[in-house]
Amino acid sequence: MNLLFAARTGVFEALTVGLGYLNQEDRLETSSVFGNMETEKTGELIYLGKSGDNDVYCVGNKYPDIVVRINEEINSLLGQTDSPLKVIPVSVAGSESVYLLSRLAMLPLAGSFFAARAKSKTLKIKDQLVSAGKNLRERNTAASRAAAKPFSPEQNSRE
Image (tube, rainbow, N blue to C red; front, side, top):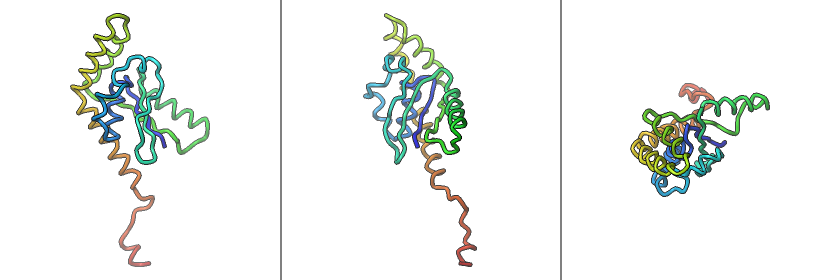
């Protein structure tokens, strides 16, 4: 399965949560994608790496919940009950200003000033974003380890 972290910004919030999920948050500041507004403008998926059998991506969209809905609708149209793509919308308190700064960063001439501010703001809330990624990983790992049928010690003694 592939995992896609969708946030209002792909090169700030979604990237940071995705790297937190992969336990690679130390790559954030050295990543060529971090704060790269040209990458953000393309709207394409950003490959972050592998987690077990899962390929992990991130993307930015003004309405991340719509990405989830589109994925669900496509799977419904195809009649798939088990999707090869799990879209995880990302929303962390305090990240609203990052989105505004990222939009201003797309302005000609003054854009680099706002991109630097968006990076700075992201780094201030980095711990929250990384923590959200790590929490998602723990929940995902716990769900994949869950047995289809609960084990009962009584069943074992009867067999």
